[in-house]
Amino acid sequence: MPKRPNAQPASPGSDRIPSHQTFHPQASDSFAAPAPNVPAALLGNLSPAQFMRRYWQKKPLLIRGAIPAPALPLTRDELFALADRDEVESRLIVHARNKWTLEHGPFARDELPSLRRRAWTLLVQGVDLHDERARMLLERFRFVPDARLDDLMISFATDGGGVGPHFDSYDVFLLQVHGKRRWRIGAQRDLTLEPGLPLKVLQHFEPDAEWLLEPGDMLYLPPHIAHDGVAEGECMTCSIGFRAPTATELTSQFLYHLAEKLVERPAERTGARRAANVLDGRYRDPQQPAVTQPAQLPAAFVQKVGSILAKVRWNDADVASFLGTYLSEPKPSVVFDAPRRPLDEMRFAKQASKAGIRLDRKSVLLYDQRAYYLNGEENALAAVKTWVPELADRRRLSGKRFVTLSRHPSMTARLHEWYCAGWIQVGELG
Ligand code: SIN
Ligand code: CO
Image (cartoon, rainbow, N blue to C red; front, side, top):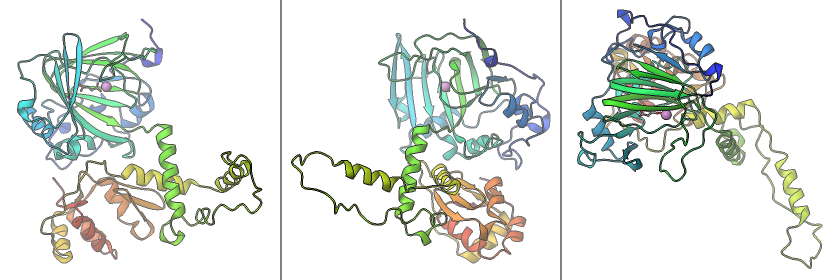
């Protein structure tokens, strides 16, 4: 069995979790990620700084008792109800008589196989967008930048259920939240997939480690580690997944973003000034001679276009602008729920000073030195530096903090706009 030394799984500490770390989704401190230099039960008593240095993108880590049982953010029936909704992405995978089948949701309850039937799995993607408890669980992982965080998927499986041995191209924390699942993993180089299957299943799986995970246990896997998780009895597993765009996706999306910026008028957006006007003018060919091969693409045409393209320039601000807008863009299925009868600005401010405000769980708010990016929209940071980064990092402001910060001109008006769009909510907790 081939083994790579840096891919050996480890279990740094099996100490029980200190009582102050218990999982109470409603408690005000439970959504906080552990501080960078404080050992955390979530990471097997490593600090986030140690975890990132030693394991992140490097090697697997098994953590016993990462979150105290019962760790279930949603019940089985709540998960089934989510899988029945049009805007929720779900998949059903059945493994029977050595055959894999895959169906896409939504699934009404009676379209799912019987609970008595073996070896089926329901996967529900983006649960954090639809359920506050799931969102809070995800927040514990914010020691990794939001720009990398993707979503929380929850799987339900009957005995023997799983998605087959496979590998993922991104990092994942696999948190067992109900029942037991046996994980086998391997750092194999051969990642050839079975041809002709509806899902990614490895042709040759060579596990080199195996554990039975119980509620509260968690397995971290970096990209490309082969793994297979099989339910032992009914079980539920949360996957905290990260986003790692391919170079092709980044390049094509960046060029698209740049092209949009280039055709915009320079004064209309921050960062576009220098790049503008490259697209001014039009192809001209006063020297074009008469031709006998009219279908031939003129070499001069190619050259001329090459020299137009060579004038396209970008800098770090353009890249940041692209990344901020691209990564904060809501997923296609996301619809914000605007309040049906919104409070006017004065009443909104009064409520917010009492109850505080929070970003809606579907909102993504990122920032850099120059701009902030909210749900795919870019705006200059200068005028709102005193409060936007704080709201973005904490995702909430207490009533007291709202009062202090709202002395800043335009803050209330801007937050009221976001509240009317359903991007923020009044009240600190969901
Ligand atoms: C599962 O939860 O069943 C599968 C998660 C994974 O292997 O990535
Ligand atoms: Co996987």
